[in-house]
View: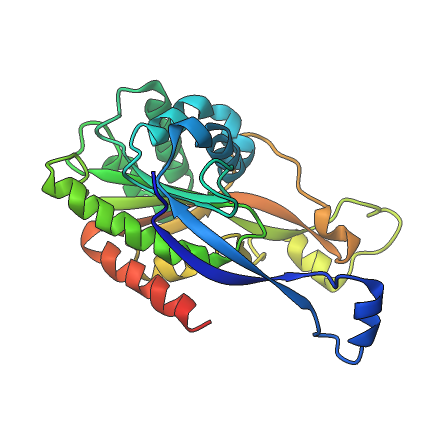
Length: 291
């Protein structure tokens, strides 16, 4: 299928050579910029399976092993006129980002969605901020939940997100006109956050700093967002909250090269009522248009 939309975004790159770097050393902020043209596509079964599966594995982190990601990817690709992928080098390449929505009620008898519903209810029981989800996603409930799945590679700018949400709104509107089952009462967005934690590396060799001690105290760590847009979406939410993954995962010391603290990734859910979803999408567009 033809691409839907193109925009230009600037991404920072390292200086092209030591010579050019030295010539511009008068300013620490001098960098060479690479113009990148992002392209939005419909999900393509013949090209996107492996790329989408990789992004889903990244989204669910250590809990990814709880799901049949191949079946979930197939389900996403089975609705090619709903959702978007973002690519750089043409339609036949792997996606750098994606966004889609799945009708939990319509697919509740599929094994991967059954497990997803059990997973959501389990997390809702563990975090009181998410407690209303337990009843909403139950099979006999009258609610119609659209499960929003979205992820991108770490170096992809957040500005690719608002167009994907805008196109999703349009596609859902067209689908409803065609009497397809996308008339949702709520949208549930799965995402990720993280907390800074005291590093376990060399902890016996040096005393902890005040920052490390604070991070080591339960309940005192600040929540950080892998997806900055989540903070905007939460303004329109009926509930939201983070949760620890069910599968035991090691706390990351990846930041210890330059900082005192490691990170602890967590899952995150945002529930938005359908009549507020359009305002949430507009909020994203306004937020990122302001730079």
